[in-house]
Length: 212
Ligand SMILES: Cc1cc2nc3c(=O)[nH]c(=O)nc-3n(C[C@H](O)[C@H](O)[C@H](O)COP(=O)(O)O)c2cc1C
Image: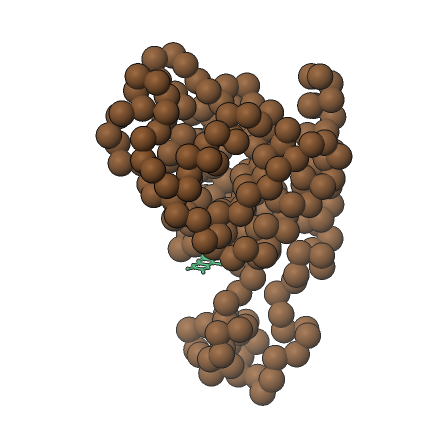
């Protein structure tokens, strides 16, 4: 089973589309989880997981952690917030601390894919560094990364046309009205991202079928 996780606070944002499309392209059994609206605390370092590799913090992560353990591969997508991974995504990954104690690595050998979204679609997005580092610390094998152009809140906040600090004025100057051509590309309009997403889905399919 391939587990796809979108860590975005937006249920149907770009991160979720990228993760879901990788799952669909793989043609294998998949499960998808959006962290939007979920209550996920960061690790509190209590070490009560040391004896049995079970996190004792009671919140929505416990069920997600169980699904991670069952998966053969994890596609983890998170948006870039303020130059790094968003808090929800980091909290979710931090909690995998419980999966590596006393030489027992519960996620060892699972395949990993890192997905990031940001305004500028950064290939070397710091978000990837964090996802890859945490997957590697869990002895997972990171096989691919996908970066996508993100959504800009300035287009829908209601103040974007006049806000000098915002993305609309910074990109297009003071315009009268937002027209189609002003919007950042939606996922379907990003040919290079869509291509990469399909390649990644097929790669997962190929590796997991070979293993089976
Ligand atoms: C609080 C916040 C901070 C952000 N900071 C950055 C940033 O520093 N760099 C960047 O490229 N994009 C930044 N973004 C844009 C997000 O990465 C973009 O909206 C992305 O599409 C969000 O993912 P989603 O579409 O799945 O919700 C920020 C968005 C928010 C809401």
